[in-house]
Image (cartoon, one colour):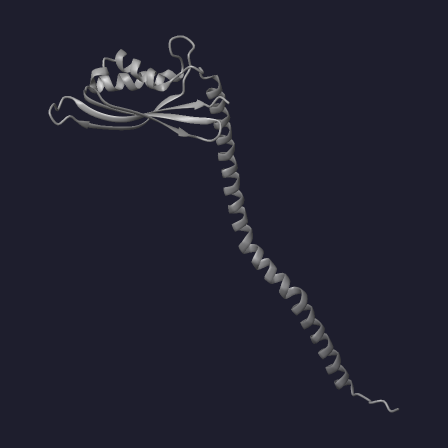
Length: 186
């Protein structure tokens, strides 16, 4: 077997080629993928940090809503079981001198799940003054703290539409809804 004899120049060329191929392979299989991964991470990390900040904000909102729901459930449970919205509104209208000004009073009930319902009363008043309307709404809204002692009720005015009376410009016509949540006894 004869051995091929290489000149020093040919040996240098073969060694340089081998080094070049090794460096190229190292670059192609390790450095280039690492650089591509770093570019991807530079792009994705700010997106993920933004998503994390949004998630933290929503988590705070969730905790606030959960606590609010817990407080609402506690208030509903402490509400007087005998409280009825319609008789309460009728007596409050009488107390404010607005009973004869009622042109429409329509109650209906909306279920809010298996344990709660909401009674809604739509009321239309004609020929009332702003002071009478404010007094009535204040009495309704303040009923959540105490009614005649320690009777408690969750009652809120949710919608309110006011316009001038066409026949008497000093008077107002108003339509509003009063909502009262209630725990359903099983």
